Length: 305
Image (cartoon, rainbow, N blue to C red; front, top):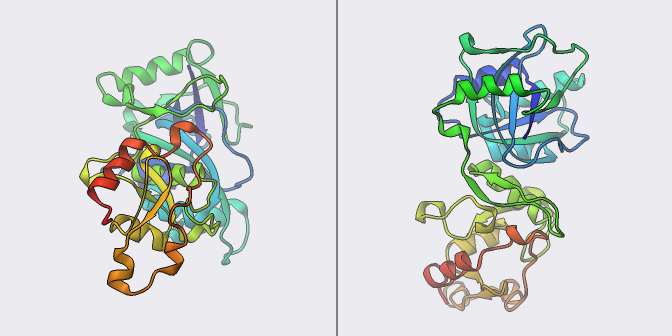
């Protein structure tokens, strides 16, 4: 198994390690130029402080990486970005980029980690051979050069459910590539992964305006739905509202149905009726396409007909 040791911002670590109920984090990178590709979903990502504090101080389980505007990352994760406010996060990005304060919505690298853990100071894991010239992090093999490190992490995690994250579903590309599984996702990761799965375009209208797109749960979380990508669909904000209220639905054959109730109740709705019968845009990965089971549930329990 591979794992990665990433260098973390001290303020990011301090904020999250003292917070309660953190089920996911966004380990963001200020440069926003390169996708993180060192791990497969479900593999461990460990946190290391800046030198000379060469210690592993926590970690999580990798689920997804992307490049996205900082405002989008904040709307998805909030304080799970390791800052109290969006302004604080922006100031930290500008400090690392060495640019003056401004209004630019910087693109940052986002490494989404599930089930994070933070190691108490007395149990920090020393990295005596860490090279100071490493500026972002490095990968290890748990049976090779990283064996001793991973054994100490396992010793700390022994008896914890974090040692074996619950798999959600396969996420590997098609055409015979190796299979991987997502760890159990949080709400922010669900939003980002669904957004990327639909290539940042509305499933109904193909609209590419990121800031008005929302990841809708087909079966609401409160009703027993999950944060699996196959329980999600990317919709423009108005369509998300109509979907949640049962004025529109999607059949298991991925076709849009628009309720007659829109006209009956609001005496309008032409722009929505034009969508009736259309096939929705679906993700390229089969595993992330809307589940027929969840769609049937929405048809039967939410849609107003």
